[in-house]
Image 1 (tube, helix red, strand yellow):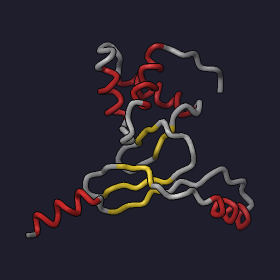
Image 2 (cartoon, rainbow, N blue to C red):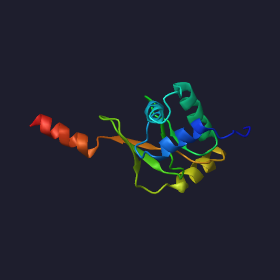
Image 3 (tube, rainbow, N blue to C red):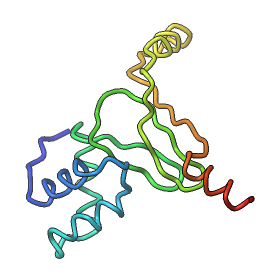
Image 4 (cartoon, rainbow, N blue to C red):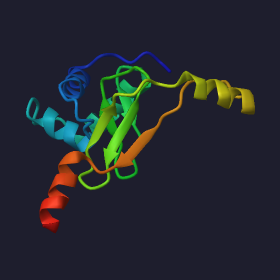
Length: 133
C-alpha cells in the first residue's frame, strides 16, 4: 500500500477512536468527529477509518449489522450482548495453540483468529428478570 499522508481529518478520526472503549461504529465515530469539525463528511470519516485500519493504527471488528472500531491492537477476543448489542473486550487470554492447530491441519500460514462470544449481558439479564416479575 502506498504511503498515506497524515491529515487533520485523519487525526480527528484516530483521536475519536482512541477516546472510546465501547467499540464504536463508523456512524458513532462520525458523530464524535462532527463535534470537532462540522464540515467533515461521512465519506471522509469512513475513508479515514479504512486507511487507519489498513495501516494498522486501529482495529476493525467485523460484526453482522455494522463493523466496529477500536484502538486496541493486540490479539484478543470479544463478547457481544445479543439484546443491547454492546461489544466488549473479553478478559480471556488469546489461544495461540488454535492458530498452530489450524496451520498444521491446513498448510495455511495463520496470522490470527478472531472470535466473538455471544450472550446476554448482566444488565440485560437484570432487566429481563425485572420484566418477568
